[in-house]
Image 1 (cartoon, rainbow, N blue to C red):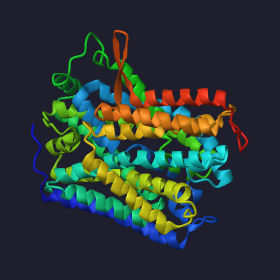
Image 2 (image 1 turned 120 degrees about the vertical axis):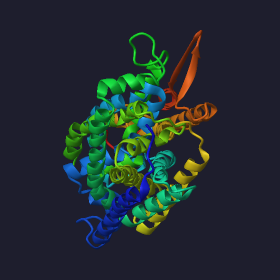
Image 3 (image 1 turned 90 degrees about the vertical axis):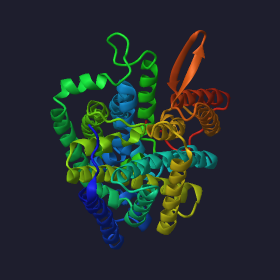
Length: 489
C-alpha cells in the first residue's frame, strides 16, 4: 500500500486549522495584555499566566508540554525502526507521576512564597550561590533547544508531506512558531492546548480504530508488522542486550521530564500545590494515548509503508489510509501538537535568561520576547547541524543536560547540608562527562560500558547523573555546606 498524493484539499484543511490556532493565540494575547491577572505584573502574566491556572487548564497545559512531536512523530518513528524498544516511553511516563505528586508541590510552595519563576530562582534562594544559579539557568537554556528542534522537525515533516518542496517546510515551521510565541505569551498555549489535545485525540482515535480495521484487525496487523522487524530471541519482545538500555532510558527520561523549563513553567503557573497533586493523579490518562500513538509505527509496517526517513512514517500512514481532507486535519493536529509545547519551551527558556542570566530584565516583556526568538534560532541550528539518527535523540540529548540540574533542584530539598560548591562541581563534571560521551557516540542516547568481558549499553544521561551525584557527595563530605533557606522536605 502506497501513500496517495495529498492534493489541494489536504493543504486547505491544514492551513485552516493551523492558522486558526495561531490567530486564536494572538487574540488571547491582545486581550490579556489589556487585562493582566490580578496582582501580576505584565512579565509574570506573559511568562507564568499570572500563576492563576486551575486544575483543568494546568492539566491541558502540562499535558500539552509533555505530549509533543516527540510523541506523535518521534516515538512511532523509533517503534517503526526498532520495534518494542521504542515503547520505553510508556514506563517513563508511569514512573514520572509519583515524582510529580511528591516533589512538585514542594517546589511550587517555595516558588510561590519567594515569587520565583524558574528552577534557577529556587536554587539561588536555597544555596545563595550566583555561579550555581547561572549553571542551572544555562542547563535549562541549552537543554530546551534540541527539544524545540524536535518540534520544528515535527512541523516540517507534516508540511513536507503536503508536497511543499525544498526548505520551505522548515521555513514555515520556524516562522509560525516565532510568530505564535512572540504574540501569545503563556496564555496562548494554555488556551490552545485544549484545541490541540482535542485534535490529537480525534486523529489518534480515528487511527487506532480505522487503520486496524482496514488492515484486517489487530491480530493481522501485529502478525504483518512482526515480519518487518528484527526477530527477538525466545518469548521476549526486546532483542538481546536491549533490556538495560530500555530500563535506563525510561528512568533517566522520567527524572528529566519535569526539570525542563517548559514543564516546570506549567507547574509554577498553577493556582495551588493541590492543583499539581490533582494533575499528577489525572495525567496518566495521557499514557494511554501515548501507547496508542506508539502503535502507529507498527501499523505503518502492516500498511506496507517503506521509507528510509523514519520521521515521515506517521504522515505517510495517514496519507495511505485516510481521505485527503482528513489527512490534512491529522497533519494540522500534529503541527499544532508541536507548536503549543514549543511555545511554552521558548517562554520557559526566556524566563531563565531574563531573570537569571541577564539580571534586572525580569520585568521586561520585550526582552523576554527577543530571548525567546533567539532560543528558536538556536533550535533551528540544532535541526540544521546536529546529525541525529532518530528525531527522538534530540530530546534525549536535552534530557542529558537537564538531568544535571537534578541534584541542586531536587536533592537540595532534603535535610542534608549540601555545599553549593559541591553542587557546582558535580554539575560541571556531570555535564562535561555526559556531553563528551554523547558526541563521541554520534549523539546516541546510550553508551556501552565494558565491565570485564561484559559489554552493556546504558543511558548516557543516567551515567552522567550518577557521576554528578558522586562528585556532590564526596565534595560535600569534604566541605560541608550551609543553607540560606529553611528545608521544606
